[in-house]
Image 1 (cartoon, rainbow, N blue to C red):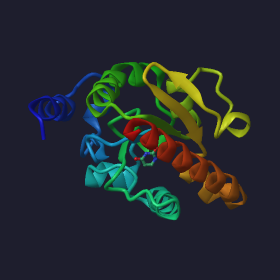
Image 2: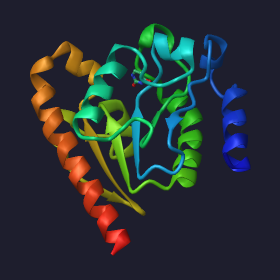
Image 3: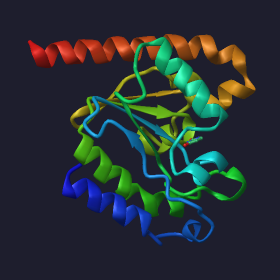
Image 4: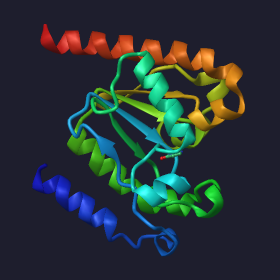
Length: 190
Ligand code: URA
C-alpha cells in the first residue's frame, strides 16, 4: 500500500467534516483492489457496514456479490466504495452537505485507483457522479464519458431486494459492463 493511500485512509478515519462522524462506529473507507480497472460506488454504509467498517457486507452486499460472481468479476479484483463514508442515521438518504463534505475522499480514491470504468450503484450515486437529473429506471446501463473513464449506473442491490423482478435487467447491465471492461482491457494490451 502506498503512502498516499495510507494517508488518505487516515484522513478518512479521522474526518469530522460533517455531523455523521458523531454517530459512526467505523468510517467505511472502501475495499478491494487499489489498482482495479473497475470501481463500484454505492450510496452510504448501512448498519452492517458501519459495524464492520467494510462496504456492502449486509443483505444488499450479498446480492451484489452474486452479480459479481455471475459475470466473473471477483470482489478482490474490483474496488467498492460509497459516496458517504459514514452511516446516516436510520439509513436515511444522504444530505447534500454530507455528500459535499465527503466527495473529496472519493475523488482522491479515483485519482489513486485510476479505474477504466466507474459503476454507480443506484440513483443517489448516479445523481452525484453522472448528472443531477439521472433517472435510474430509464438510464441504467447507459454509458457516459467523463474525463479518462467511462461511467454507468445500475440498480442498487437494495432496490432489487425490494423488487426482484428487476434482477433480469441488472444481469443484462452487469454482463454488458463486463464485456466493456474486457474490450477496454484488450485495447490497452494491443
Ligand atoms: N448500501 C450502500 O449503498 N452501500 C453500502 O456499503 C451498503 C449498502
